[in-house]
Image (cartoon, rainbow, N blue to C red; front, top):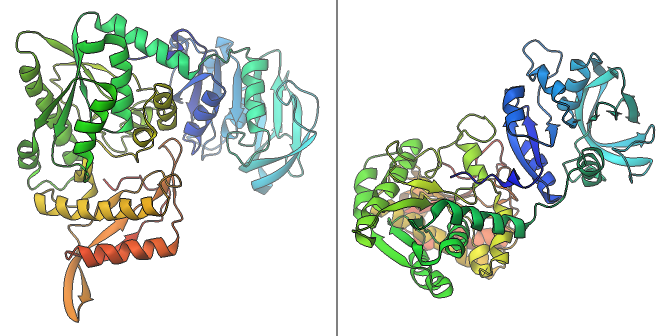
Length: 521
């Protein structure tokens, strides 16, 4: 069951040319209360038209538009008469496709660049004559297409922006979506509202109301179960569905033995007491561990766990209602899950999320995924609007496969115990230091397949490393490593190596996303 939020709202399609910031563009549009989705540059004009978008935004990209093999679009897209905004590569592609000229610059522009308005324009309405933008290019538009006018320039780039009000096509060389560009949101709003005449009516209240209505209409008098993990995603999804169908929903908590310390109790006690949702608990630890025995490949782990989740739910249905059919399964799938699993933007599979790429082919349930097209921060705000407590809403994200994908190596009782104890220490120390609001999450990873020599109490040790992966993020699509104070890191390291004999090193991962994913597996 897909939730098409744009049925009653304008839709903006962000055409992704391999940009670092494609997801950020989509987020910036949504911040203006306009719904957006990401599609690949390979989408045909017919595929785009079938979605009935109200505007298109061409993203940036890493290539040069004049190079052999450079990515392009179906030229029939220009005949659809849909308002278009091109950004960086997308800007240059518009110029090239409409018979302008793009050439290599003698001097590149990267980072902060002073930009001047060359003419009055709708796109740059309410933006000063001189402002700062964030550039990242060595190519420039050197000749604008017919019916276009130059509306901005820089010291090195005479054509930094252009527009054609008659064609309703616009383009800028800089990146308005990044915070370093002044008046970036003003520019995007001008394009969407002033140029494309879109309505800013996609709000949290509309999301909640439409999701509840769609669930109610789809389910009717059928029975539904929900995969409840205790995390914000499944909690919000369950609450939406409960608002729609009441006691026709039964939540199922699968205790697979892969959770962090105290989380099973949080689900079975705290959440139920708050929401009064019907909950069934199934102890499936034995089945999960037996299936994961000897498995070290991360994709296999995810797929095994995804399949075991479904099998466990099938078993749960027998216990819940032997005399009636349960037709639907609720999951807290998010938009980043879909994109990283090879959907959404048409990208390669980065990793199969257990609730997307890990589902078995013979799934017996119809899926209800009310959050499938939402980013994490949007889900958090919706949770607050639904009245869920902040300690659930701002709980650090935790993957569905649990601690299994925070072990590089075999998943067994011994390794789970090591990483669980280390994770608890990290959460305790970060909580006492009031860092929970500053970091988005901190995966704690056990390198079970790695050992190194150490010394403890004048004795040689041969123990495992623990990796700390503290990150900051808004949407889970991009992330930066969190700058944790050294004294806190020192205390965490000391506690882990003192309290967990199997560990003799603590390592800090300072890789951003991209290139590294947030989880190690």
